[in-house]
Length: 363
Image (tube, rainbow, N blue to C red):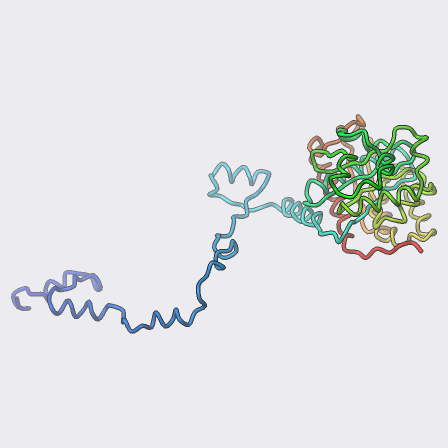
């Protein structure tokens, strides 16, 4: 066929540019040969210049696609589930704040960190604060967390968890020489669902009052060899021998204050006494807690009280009133109102902010 009587030239005009069929025969073979990549060993050369492949390439960071940032709660989570993951709004500011606090609570501890919960006034929720801060730490951290009842007046910390043993701090001290491993200590502790372990005090005050500074120092020295975080519940008398032993061994303190005028005054005078008696380092790194043990009346200016303690301590945290804690029975994080759980998370994060501080000891 020729161009004059409808040959290939006329047929080619029927196709869009780049879509014309490749002609058969020697001309087509020439076109295919021109389009084929050159087999000059350049590809092999490129591979020879690259690092040799190995199984080390198969890491999660290299081979897995980045996980989607899925909201964990709230209406954003609801939309994500309703749309089958098509609509992803990302986490809210509150959720990002929650993640930041959780990360702070997980701050690594070098050795064992000891935190004492103190108050010169009874009925302010000191034992409850110690327990629930311990629950928060134990539920989020991967290491061992224990609470020790250091109240010489028959403390109640051991009654706020499900008891797994009748052993107390007295029996722990009595068997001190036979305890060499963590498995040995577990026979003297009760473990809550949060993984927090508790060493209870004796119910007989004549026994607990016989425990003084040296006894609690020995108990703390034993526990710090097997645990990463030790929460110490104390009595209401900072001059008691047991409390002095705990203060001399602790790294940080948490001062609990009821949202009342006399409660705030007692908490502030506790800081005054500590500062005058060689515990200035504990005051500087202290965390103050405004703990609402009952529904607030509104008469006290809590904002002003909070500013006072925030100026004296590392941080000041408010804990709202919660009906779950009114009974004085076992306290569980899961039974608290959401805002109360969030407040204890804030408290644990404020305490953990001091984990990296170097601890000074009273001279």
